[in-house]
Length: 200
Image 1 (cartoon, rainbow, N blue to C red):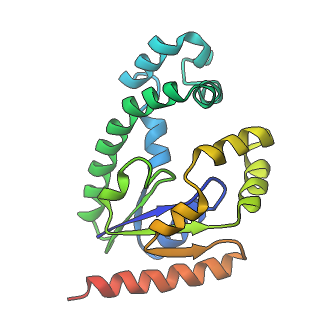
Image 2 (image 1 turned 45 degrees about the horizontal axis):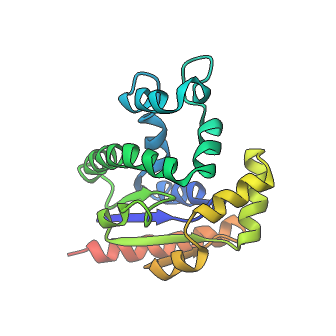
Image 3 (image 1 turned 180 degrees about the horizontal axis):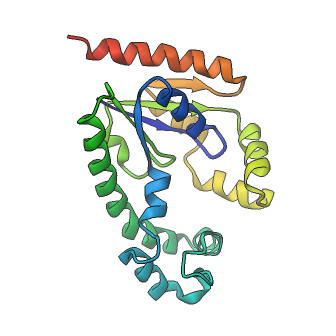
């Protein structure tokens, strides 16, 4: 069984994924894979450079993610082009990694993805968990963590699926607006439920 784990920026998806990991559950993060597919030497990075030029390349030859982010937020058609390029590659690598996880000792695998619903990756999962926090908490957490401008965070929030739409698509919800213990209790409950589904 593959379980999707998603949530808006600053919701704490990685923290929740680690809590599942502590319970012996293998997981793959689509954000990590997205970074891998545009690393130096990858064909996708060469395509991005061809389209946008050296303004999106750092001195060491890697992708300047902040510069690219600014371009695609200002031009939706460029964002669409980038998604058309990267999403199929990301999906292929996610499928391969999930296959490896399923072949291992983990009773089920987690696919952690901020764009689980938007990218079509939800088709890969049997259950979808949404990690939920209020929008003002997403904003404050992201500002503290990433050191970006409030305008930038608001643009990201606007570009992502709305909180209401995401919750409407959830099979399970983890409220991550309180303390770690409260989150871990919810993870433990869902972990028991998923293991029970897999029992003969």
